[in-house]
Image (cartoon, rainbow, N blue to C red; front, side, top):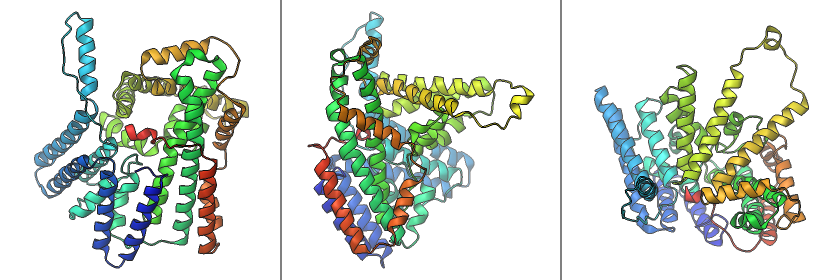
Length: 477
């Protein structure tokens, strides 16, 4: 069930009305939202509803045991077992085929070729997201940063809550679970913010991402040799915008839908292409994942506490695993490696000794220097996106080779698509919190006028959007 479809609109209208009708009965409301979430997930493939329930049950029981156990060894072993089960399920569905293929390739290179079983496993949608939420919950209970949930309904709802179930954002238990204990309120501020975010997300996905995907990016990446280097350059810029609008659009809709149900999520994107360094980029891109990797992988490995070599090692492990989290392919590992190498280089440059005058300088960087840093960071990200988007290494290197053959004839990059890319990049430099400010300006309007404006905007988006609707890119992760 895709967000920008009539099926989801009908589904959400029913859930919205039923959940708010049960506002005086909190437990009934939770059951309504839990049932709706499982229906939403089962709409994709009912066979995996049991997997979602199994994941929730494992983390619920682990949290209870960790919280109730007095012996530290029991707590530690339970934590390890819960993490192992979570990761085993994820690895079995997502990486078994990749590992078998890689093993076969390695044996062939060594002259020991064998007929290994070919695994065709259907990947449950959203498995990476709900697995990471389960792990964060049991780790937080172990660290005593959040209390263990006593009601299984609360924990099952936390892991399966449908707005963020299949593509995030990754919601922390310490943020969401306390909201289940409070009576939700649909304030005018939440209503306006929710509607604004939903419209913004739909526009990003249905108009910008879909136009760029169907009319530029997919065409050029399928046959890069058939286009000029300028076409390829515009196409990779187009992919940078496409994946941003696709994923941040989903996050906007998820946060907006949650707001209309009375729950608050943190933002997941913050104008990432205005970042002046790769570290800054990861503070702005897929914020819930970057914070998860920082808190549950990088810091437990030691972070930057044990010297330069240890820091670089931890950065490399974190980003390589972050790469393979996105997909079971070597191209994703290279994507992570590029980010790891640049993050390490940035850290090394910051460690260089400065003169006394430079250390105490308070002069702001020149505009040209700041713009240069932003442009450099953006192009490093775009380079890594080539490996992220390519089907395999051959496709990635073919794209890079054709990009190096200088030619300026524009075939795929029409004036409309080029203007769409430029306008989308320019939008990254709008004032911070522009959406929240726009939402606040809408609050004084009558509800009838808000509803009419929302309906007209929906119709306008549908009219200008291209035909068809591709799944969100991050559904495959």
